[in-house]
Amino acid sequence: MDVIETPMLPLSRASSRRIPAISNRPHPLTDILRNATFLGLGLAAIDLAAGAADCVPPVPGLVTWLRAEGNALDTVSSSPVTLVNGATFAPGLAGQAFRFDGVDDYVLVPDSPNWALGTSDFTIEVWTKFNRVKNSMLVYQLNGTARGGFEFDFQAPGGASPSVLGFAIDPSSFGIVRPWTPAADTWYHLAVTRTAGAFRLYVDGQQLGAEQFDTRPVATVSGPLELGNYELAGYALDGFIDELSIYRQALTSAQITALHTAGAAGKCVPPTLRIESLPGAVRLSWTTNATGFALETNGPAFAPGAWSQLGTAPAVVADEFVVTNVISSPVRHYRLKKP
Image (cartoon, rainbow, N blue to C red; front, side):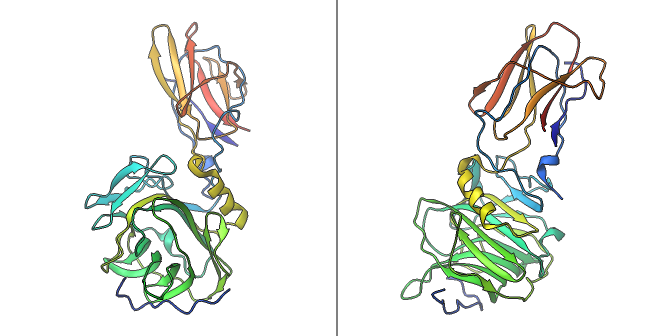
């Protein structure tokens, strides 16, 4: 059950890793509680699923979620993210995204034990768009200040060699690599999973080539994640990264497809209730990027069992639900609840 309650207040890389021959082939965020306080009364029962964006609820095992919504934070851990050398925010696929210039921009995410993937199951998924189709590092983990951990990147060597999407367990060893030829100025949903030693790559919800079995562990190192660039020259991304997420479980094909299908709606974010004081009224609002919530109220003398659903359907303004409520009684409690 998801509840947001309102307590009472007054109002071409020179790497040793070579492309091998290509064959033909919890921490569920929905448990987050965010508190706010509202004055007013007179709302009635509503089902917020109607008219809301068709987002995908985050699944258990999500340990890193870089939404890039104009703030430099990991949505799961609240760890600060550092934008370096001019990396910035720009319109993305789901809201905003990180924008890289293809020269020296990158984003750093502080080290976390959640990235010690070892031999366990995991998923990394991300939306990306290339302004130029070239060698591009999506994300890798440093060992201290040098490369050493996993790497998820696109390589376009040119000539007779095919362009590929690959995941490496360390700087010299691919876990899986498959041919892929993207186009410029196109958003792609990319993912890599490992289930019991079987690596799989996905592009736009579809598995890319055959799975690859590799029981070797992902390198265990201590260091930050770097997005959009690489220690060695030639892998600076000219383009965008949005919604990069890491899970300590392997998402199923159906879950990967659902993330792609959600598109701009993205993963559901627990809504935060907001209030604006108006003459004789209050304006309650919350984002539409969540489905299935209902609005409830409790009286001035709060009683745990006294929540009741409220009733005027909210207006949809841009990406928010909005209700203007005339104040005619003392302070009340409001909450959004998902049964």
